[in-house]
Image (cartoon, rainbow, N blue to C red; front, top):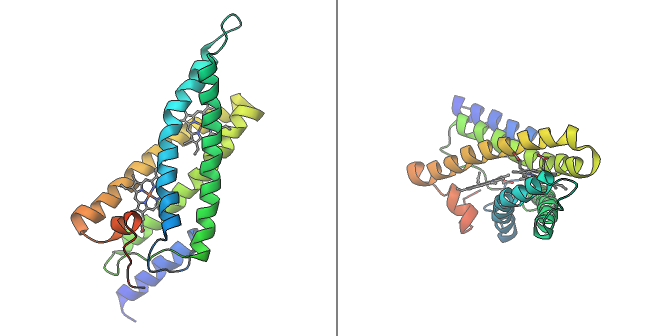
Length: 187
Ligand code: HEM
Ligand code: HEM
């Protein structure tokens, strides 16, 4: 076995350790819908969180606006839906599988993908848990953690989106297209 095959085997071992999945030819329709659904839900979490800030700015003589209270609830349910979608997506990694990176991908690309996808899933779990803690358990303890995690998600998601565009525009491979149109890669 040549040096390149050994490094690819090591990188696949890392992917399996961080995020177990079986190989597939492409992402299924459900996997793609859930990916873009989570992106949309994460974006709506931003304006609804402003309503949470407004409801907390009120005091004894000033009741929060009913619409802000409604958006507060939308934020919580949006977060729980993101958690549910993340659980289903992890299940689909085992049941349907995920396509491997193009054969020409370097070791650093493989490791970067494994680490960033593991971080994204970790954040999609940790955010709803800390958000629920901030709302129902102990705001002083959980709200600062939840806030740091929202900025972490923003940072990792920006790097992730730039990487997807790099694959599409510079490497000109099928990585972005297989998450949009479902184009399949040979197993
Ligand atoms: C992936 C899911 C979630 C995302 C992306 C998200 C995002 C955000 C963002 C961007 C903020 C504003 C942070 C800031 O002011 O700097 C925020 C605040 C907040 N979120 Fe979430 N959230 C999620 C889930 C939840 C859930 C499930 C709940 C409650 C059930 C929740 C409750 C809160 C609360 C109470 C705050 C205000 C914290 C504070 O006092 O500063 N979040 N969230
Ligand atoms: C909140 C924002 C985002 C989150 C949380 C997120 C999360 C994820 C996760 C967890 C995966 C791994 C899926 C799996 O194999 O199980 C993934 C894959 C992918 N995402 Fe995102 N994503 C976000 C935004 C974006 C954006 C904006 C783009 C495009 C510009 C994008 C393009 C892709 C592509 C192409 C893949 C497949 C990578 C591959 O086949 O190896 N994502 N995303």
